[in-house]
Image (tube, rainbow, N blue to C red; front, top):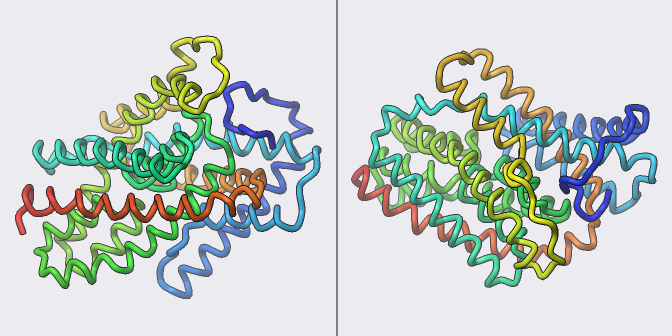
Length: 351
């Protein structure tokens, strides 16, 4: 796979040329899915999601074997168009109406939180010496919804495969640590269930992990945490829209050669427009809960396939070189989230 597998200049090869790389990506994805199921059976919960396992497996394969040229078209197809379709379909799985009971102050707090977390996370990444695109990926992953946000933002800002792999891998590890330690923090501080639910909803990035982190504190914490998490997910569309408008400036920040000014449809990728359109359709009730659940399953499958392809396209040496700075940035960004989350947790809900 080329340096920027998510570039908009990528062209679709013929169907037969896609088969070897697609089959390889599917095989890696199936193994990752099976490992995730095994993990859930052994521990009661998949702490490391299949999509993270898929990208790690792809990188491990690259350590011992580099797929030849005949695999590259299919791997590139899975890493770009398949991922874009998954991001677009994600819009059908969330509904703005589900947030009606939260109240305007709490929703406004979530919007401000995500904006500040994005800016702060980006600043931390740049201070740690990370490239602008990598800093954006980590900031978006922690501020919005983890792996899904990283996968959605990557094509918008034209991030490289190795950056996506590193951001997902290290953010996922830090995320699991937060899930394990957060209940002890809440109990140690004697937080009330609503306050702790806000804290969990704002700091843990994956929906299943929010439930795992909030459940030990009680049912109210669980409900509030899930609601806050949904509000963060709904920020994915607007954030990607804004990043699409700002993406041309990244070339200047990175010192890249200037390119021709893109047209409007290039500034805002089709899959972000589709995401927002499906979100509206879901909110209007034209997509019921049952169909939304089925679409969510399709999104998970497509995302695992895309992550397997991204892993297969990563140079492991480059991933190792970026490791310490990415890990430090992820950790510092999570600490920033915890500090920021205590404000709405204590003020908007009350301790």
